[in-house]
Amino acid sequence: MSPAAQQTPRQDANPIHDYYERIFEILPWAAFVLDEPGSIIDFNIVGAELIVEKPSAVNRLLAGEALGCVHAGECGGCGNAPACKKCGLRNSLNETSRTGRARISVVPMEFFRDDTIVETRFLIATTPITIQPPLSILMTMQDLDEVNRLYPSVETRRS
Image 1 (cartoon, helix red, strand yellow):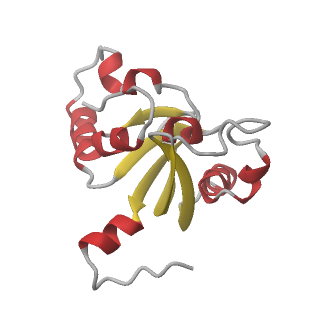
Image 2 (cartoon, one colour):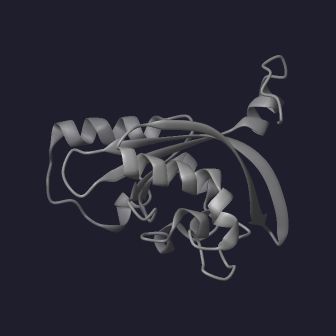
Image 3 (cartoon, rainbow, N blue to C red):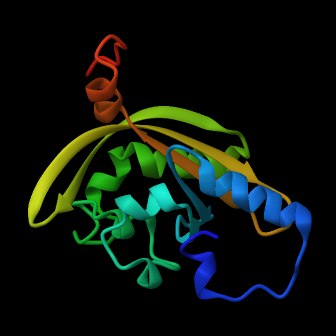
């Protein structure tokens, strides 16, 4: 069960739900379920590794806040700071929310990790989940710099 789901006991014992929950958990990259404004509803184990807060404190934080984005604390806050207009993560979420279509993009990001700013590039995919209203978005993140370290022959050029 995902770290976020562990906080709230489930009343249902739906085998289909359990099946998809297991798929969500075994994804080899970070996965988050977000609401339309970009607040985290759920995340998998790999996603928990990217979160700077305690997993129990993440529920309903905006993605940039939970991930430690260097711009999340700027004037206007996560999603509204001046840098957010150019943020690939924010733009992917907004585009998927606006169009209802999946989007894939390479996004450079800067995070705080142990009082140090870390730069990396992610392959971010945002997909609408419209099983029941309101709209949710599945966001997956794959660290392209990590892919380069693990598989040096795979070219994922920096632009």
